[in-house]
Image (cartoon, rainbow, N blue to C red; front, side, top):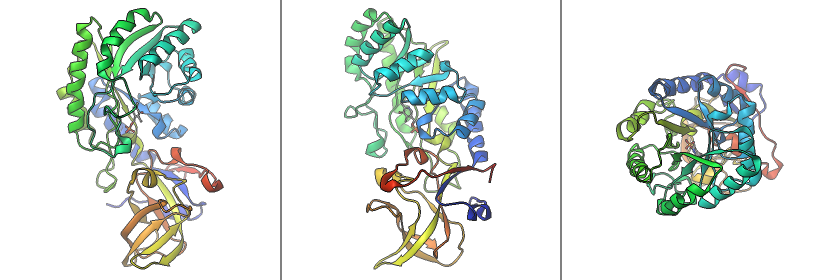
Length: 384
Ligand SMILES: *Cc1c(COP(=O)(O)O)cnc(C)c1O
């Protein structure tokens, strides 16, 4: 069943704009509640995927926490009403000011990504007269089988501490008086559709946990990160990912100790499918092998195709004519400003509306002002 958009309402709005289906978002959150929270799992929403307040409001009401990667994201989460003890803070390059922000609010966990960061955090916590609760991010060297730009858990990636450094970590820990190590953290990448890498991750986590226990370190929590993918090819067949199977993998493979908490950090899988970029056809131009549909949205509004070779579905909302072959391109002076190449679409003309699907995560938040383009508006399904 194709997704139904309020096309008549769209006609009166200035394009391009983002349109969020909050009913679908709520359904997705309900699945996470049903298959994750109900098992006692703690789920933090990765706020970087989409930090709009309307989205955050529903996340908070669903009882999820927040995963941040910058100081400003911590402040945004607090502003949106999240409690600091629901906030985890990761990132390879936290500035002193950002660390101080986390200390000020006494957040749930600093997910530290290097030994040097631990030393700096300890020092800043001492200066602030605080005790920082810390989870160390370890790089499990697990192949996530996703695009290389969104793989994060391999030795060659910049993220996390290599487990070979653990002896040094154990040596350092007793000297870090203002740090309380409470957990271990992992995040192997993004848009992972195959569940096997998550099972592999669990096996690695189990080994790492044993190592910590051999050193006499008991872990209050394990944070396995996020990265679960969505179906970009068929958003209408799979409007939300299969969370039952996802959480099931961890239930089956992760060795959880008595009283230990398990945390997740999900971004794309929660918010990806509920967002759409709505755009208008400016010009149609016949090419040699294809036709170009030049639309008024570009890589400035959705950079994923240019950055990750991502293919978002394009639905034509105002034509049911016979299909023709199109390259759907934006107006920006870059060849990579191309949404799709050689796809079949109902014949379009100047003024037709299209929806670029599955754009709720890493879409609007990654928009830029290149070519002096203005930031576009967002509309929500309950207000148009
Ligand atoms: C981006 C990020 C996530 C969320 O990734 P998704 O692929 O959107 O689920 C989780 N944890 C960390 C540390 C991240 O940087």
